[in-house]
Image 1 (cartoon, rainbow, N blue to C red):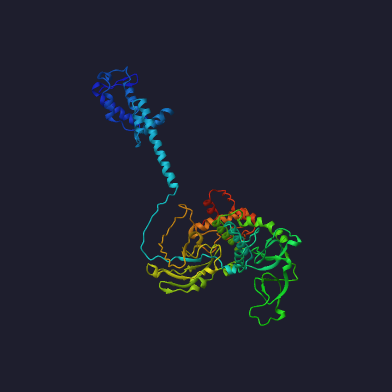
Image 2: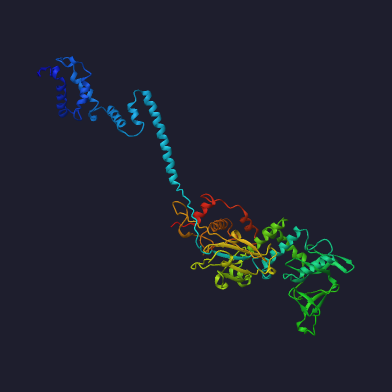
Amino acid sequence: MNDEYRRGSVHFTHSSLFLAVASYFAVMAKNSLYLASDTDVLHVANIMTRFGWGDGTNDCEKDIQCNLLEEDAGHCIDPSRLPYKERLRWHFKQFCYKTSSHGIPMLGQAPNALYRAVWIFLLLMCAGTFIYQACSVVEKYKRMDKITDIQLKFDTAPFPAITICNLNPYKDSLLQDVHAIRKILNVFNDVMEKAGQNNLKPKEEAVDDDDEAAVRRRRKRATAMFEPAYSDCVCKNSGSGIQCTANTTSKPEAEKMCLCAFDRDSGDAWPCYPRETWNEEMCDFCDDHNYCTKQATGNTGVKSSERKPCLCQKFDPFCVAFDSTISILKLWEYYGHVQADEAKVLEALGFKDMNDEVAIVTKAKENIIFAMSKLSREQRIALSIQKHQLLQKCSFNGMACDIDRDFLIIDDPTFGNCFMFNHNRSEIKSSLRAGPMYGLRILVYVNATEYLPTTEAVGIRITIHDKDEYPFPDTFGYSAPTGYISSFGMRMSKMSRLPAPYGDCVPNGLTTNYIYEGFRYSTEGCYRTCFQDLVVKDCGCGDPRFPVLKDAHHCEVFNPESRGCKLKPQRPAQSGPSVSVSKTLLVEKV
C-alpha cells in the first residue's frame, strides 16, 4: 500500500481500497460526530458495489469518500445536528418504522403520495371506529347496568303479616251520634232517591196510602227527631180524612198555614194538618224520637209530674212533643237560611248534578272519610268494629291464637279498624307444613246489621305484607265474602337491590317526612307521601285518605274551596317527574 498526500485528500490503490475504506470508517467511528455507532461493514460493502473499479484508483478529482459518507449519513446520523423540519421528518419516519400499530408503518414505506393518502384514509377510519367503540364502552360503564340474578330456593319461608278488615268501616248505630255523618247520609239518601226517580218527600202531589206507609217506616230510623213546625201546605179531602202536602219554602197565608211534625236531619215534614186541628195535650209517654201517646199502653196510672206537654191532632192519633217555652219553628224562615247553603253543601260533598248511583256511593264513601278525619284516633277506633266482635276463632300451626296478644289494631281511613296478625318484629313465625290446615285459620263475624248504606258488599278484606310495612288494604287487599270458606295461598318473592352508585336505594329503608310513622319505607307509601306533601303545600290542608304530618291538618268536609283544590292537578316537581320528587323528599343519603 502506498501513502500519498495530494490536496489534503487520502487516496488508496485499487488493490487495497476495500480494506482502506473499512479502516477509514473504523477510525471515523471513533472520532467523527456523524457516526452514531460502529460502521456496518456489510453496508459499506453494498455501497462499494455502486462505484466502478477505476473510480477509486489514483483519482484525486472525484469526491468518492465524501459520497461514501453521504450514503451512510441517513442510516446512522445524529438527529440533533439536523434542521428542525428535517428532525421532525426523521422522528416521524423512525416512529413509522418502529411502531407496532397497524397501518402506521405503511405510511413511511409508501412509494408515493397516492399510496400514502389511501393509508391515511384507512387509518382515520379505523381510528374513528376505535374512538366510537371506546366511548360506547365508557358510557355503558357509567350507566352502572345491573345483572338480575334469579335463584329458586326450596326452604321454609318466614310467615308474613296478615291484616284483616271488615268491609264496613264503622257501625251504623254509632255513627248516628256524629252530626256530620248523619248529614252526609241524609244527603246521600236524597241524592240516591232522586237518581232513582223515587223522591223521599213529594212536594206537589198529595201523599197516598202507600206513600204514607213508606214514610211511616222511614220514621223508625234512629236519626229521626221530630218537633212541631209551621209550614205552607195544600190540603184536600179524601175518604180517610184531610191530606195535606207541605211546601216548606214559601211563606203561607193565614188560612193555608199548617202544623207539621218536622225532622231537621232528614227534612221530612209529615204529617201536616191545618193549624186549628192541633190541640195542646199532656201525654203519658214520649219516645226518643219525640213521638208521644196520650195514654201509655197498659198504663195503670202515670203521675201528673211525669206527663209531658204535646201537640195532638184530631184526625189521626198522632202526637209530637212540644215545649211551650220555645217558639214553634217556621219552615219558610228555616229553609230560607238552609237553602242558601244547600248548593254549597252539595258542591262540597260532590253530589251536585250526579245521577249515577255507583258514582254517588263512591263519593259518599269519600265524604265519610273526610268527616271521620276530624275525629281523634281513639274516637274512630271506638266507632268501628272491635277485635273480639270480628275475630271469633283463630288458630296458627294447629294451635289456638291469643287474639288479644297476636293481633294489633290498625286504624285505616277506608276500612276502619283492621287487625294485623304477626306484628311482633322480634318474633319470627313460620308455617310447619304447606296447606291451609297449618297456616292461619280464622272464623270472623262481620255483623251485617251494622253496615252503612254506602257499604256495597258483605265480607272482609285480607292483606298479605311484611310485618314492618303498612298494609294498604285499599290497594293491595283481597276481598272474601261471608258464608264461604275462603283460602289464600302465597309464595315468597324476595328482592335485594344494590345501593348507590348502582341505584337510588338507601340502607335499611331510612326515610324522612314519611307519613306512615313506625313503618318501613315502601313504594306505595312514598307515592302517598309525595302526593300529600304537594296537597298540603298547594291547598293548606291534607287529603283525609292519607295521614298528615304533625304540623298539618286535613281538609274540611263541607268546605268546597279546600276540596276543590284537592281535585285540581298537582303542580309538577321542579326537578323532574314524581319519582324524582320521592327521592329528594324521602330518601336520606347515608
